[in-house]
Length: 201
View 1 (tube, one colour):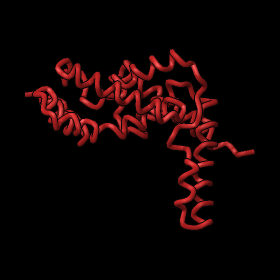
View 2 (view 1 turned 90 degrees about the vertical axis):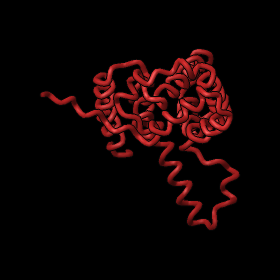
View 3 (view 1 turned 180 degrees about the vertical axis):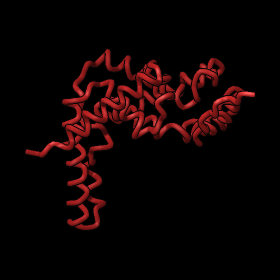
């Protein structure tokens, strides 16, 4: 008798999402705080990376995403997507609405910036120089990539390498097939390697 193909093991985040969905559907008040605790920071990082480093605007997007998720929790279908992928899909719709409203140029993500107030916390000049140097290098690399990668390719790289979604989950988030995502990721990786491998000149 033929055996069914083995299904990939769900991530710890996905497994936690299953239990969280059950509690949210039962209107467990503590589940609302757990939703924020489990996904809030990651969603904020993702939103900030797609909103030109605007952390305040990213926070608004996260709040809107979580409110919509709670309000529509009974519509979540685990047969179609994992809970994290469903949640990021909601976030992406809010981001797309903001992109349409603002039409602003892409800039350096928040994670590649160093706030001025953080400089006072550096223990000595050597650590400060290393920290600033690393951030400046990150900014330079992001700026270089933004010239050779499309918005879609940048988004896929963020979802894959920063948010650690699988190609299948990314497909659910962005509305593409798994094969299409894998093809785009492969192309984006090649372009990124070619760009970052160039001499500084």
